[in-house]
Image (cartoon, rainbow, N blue to C red; front, side):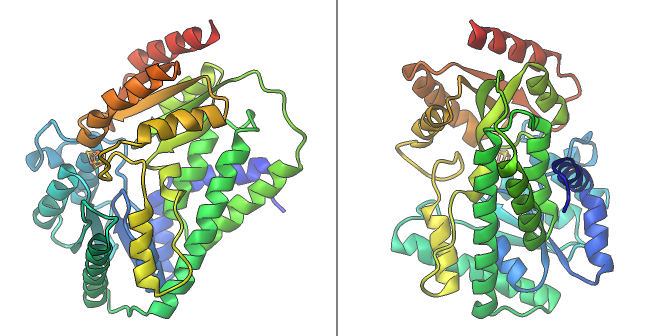
Length: 375
Ligand code: SF4
């Protein structure tokens, strides 16, 4: 059995080398399908015997993609297109892009022109996802994705296989929820380590990732409780995978005890229902999702959700990690800030993007926030 350190190293290795993982699966003769965030139906791709690989871009300088996008668009999308143009996704069978914000819509259309050798499959989600007609809309969009995948890859879809994949994904969701909660009691696991556990999930077969996470859970549960003098915080945003930023959090004696990050825990909050037809159930899973900036919610319940998360984990404050030019997150921010202030929950905002090289401003921000929380 591996040690905690060995498992953390494995997560780090996978999280740092998606290219290597892609090549590994291709060499095994498997087909890989790129999945752009946020809620791409990976279960469908998995059920058709292919590897769904999370595609959230990378910290790269954007050059070529600037010919397609204006400068004021989120850098996640820009870097996905840049990597596509530069051949980093070579070998993948298709890319699925959900239409959950304006930037994602632009990415799909630009992809067709900029990366014509990798077929683009759009995934249309309804604004009103909860009523019956919204669930039916989602199901029809999934059918379109299935039809495109069958035509492009020759793989076949079956509801029986989808049921098996949904069970595998539900087991992974459970493991990810559990590890997140256990890590709150393990201050020795750094913010960088925590990120690796979440990030590696996008580049591994879910069965394997679940097995490794469950191994880590068992090892951590068997360890004695650690003394904790760290400052507990909650993070919120779309993406928080920058090692430079997370190291600043670690260096300032802070511990992420829970998150509302789209790239992390937002993925794992809702399971596919088990009774009924699998594709209907998958559509119902999407309808049951909440507390996310890209999901329509007139009441913006996400704000209270984060406040309650902070209370539940005794967090002293919230760091909002805002992806620059992300409209959905920017619109939510004043509402979040209002809720934090009303609850006397200290918070700070850090703007990030995938081209950030200088973290001095973020460093000053986090140092100051630490002093506020220590006061
Ligand atoms: S939700 Fe925000 S971060 Fe995600 S693609 Fe849209 S603009 Fe970019």
